[in-house]
Length: 279
Image (tube, rainbow, N blue to C red; front, side, top):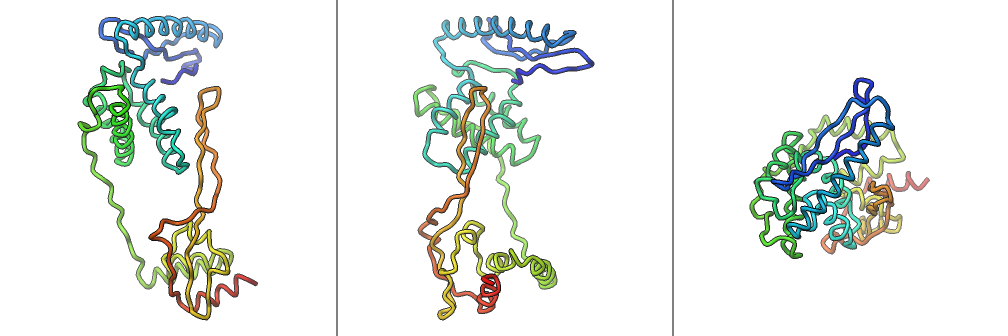
């Protein structure tokens, strides 16, 4: 839910949460028509006090600690984001939560009231954005509710009953001879990157492997290239005092997977380009 004040037709508005004491659901209601920001904020704060009082009451009655949205945020902060891995997966996860899952929650519910149908409804809404949005939302909802069962927050693993989302399959399109000539002609106009492009095309190196290369990795005598390190981007997702998430990143050297350690036989012309780059 967006808790920010906003203007509509020159009047101030806000969205508030309302607890239904009969069904124990939380709906989102937009209130508008306020002539000043101060007036809107005063009413918003009063509505928030009422909400906090009511949600505390129904949590006490049901002995349920979290709503769906609260648990998703708790899961990211206290479970998923505490793992030592600093890959882009964490950035993708919090983006999916904040920009796909939460905006498609039409009503919040206490955690024990969450059903597979409730989660599938969110996934279906995300799929209308794009197939990859549906895939991401399903992937992380499955992970969240598998953990909810494993850590004892739910008795059943709702992740097992989520709808299937067809996987997007990457199609490899190889350039024909004319397209390759055009690509090389264009690449040659950029000498700072020409060798790197050639290494990707004719040695099959990935971006991180190219960035991790040293001149000493090339052996002209044997016409080989050693791959023994790579550059990767390390992300650190942090939560500020304002509740906003930040994901600064830096490039770091890391060892490749064991299967990626290799010595390649490469074309002789790559060594000519290497000498040109050294100059």
